[in-house]
Amino acid sequence: MAEAEEENTIGVDEPHKLEIPTRRVKNIMKLDKDINKVNSEALFLIASSAELFLQSLAEKSARVALEKKKKTVRLEHLRVAVKRHRPTADFLLDSLPLPPQPSEQNHTKDRAKPRADKKPVPFATRSIDAFFQKST
Image: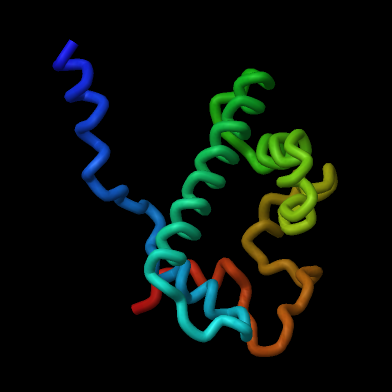
């Protein structure tokens, strides 16, 4: 009985190790003009929340892939998972790329070319993809 209690209390005093780089989370937060400083506790909570959200989204997408008897999670599985959860769909569905059209699937050479139909980013901002690229 004492061993079971020890196992339950082992992780209580240890701080949670974040997988998401907090520096990048802080930089994303500072893209908002109303935010000047970010408290370390707030940064930790937002980064932890983002991790939990991404974990949940990945699990739901994996379930959709398994339902369709696929081994690889694809964009279409992610879109279905987002559509099934209404609060997530309300804010995230418009941000996800549209699925490829049947005519686009046959042209593999065109995939390497940049898409000209992307919406331009507002002035003084950059796309989220550029933000997460490794800088030297």
